[in-house]
Length: 169
Image (cartoon, rainbow, N blue to C red; front, side):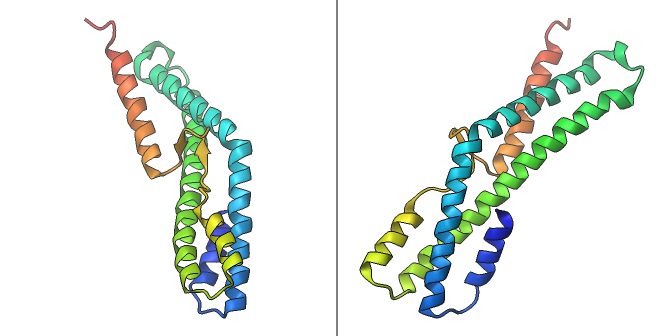
């Protein structure tokens, strides 16, 4: 999806005739429909993947930091951290970059539609499509963005400190 938005944004940066603008509006409509259907199908699995990766990161980090009797094979203890971290970063970074590009394309399409001379019926159709939200979300709870990445690691750190200091004299 990111590459499709990149191609659309590259096309939008050039000067176009009215016929080409209408084709770009149709391409944008197809892209936003695809994003909405993708989000409809995969927002819950994305939520579960994010949650399970955070739980995996937490427990493997907790075991490494606070359970010192299991340091026989440190490589095998770091492997789950690398796995969960890479899965978490892959999901959050790709979804947030896609949402950023979708927002940028939406802004450009709004400007393009204002400057485009189409008949009223078509213009209303495209305005309705542009007005609809088309973001990748985590189970319709939270739209993926860069701040979610920082927040998730802050949450892990906070809970790690809280659980690490419990029971200490």
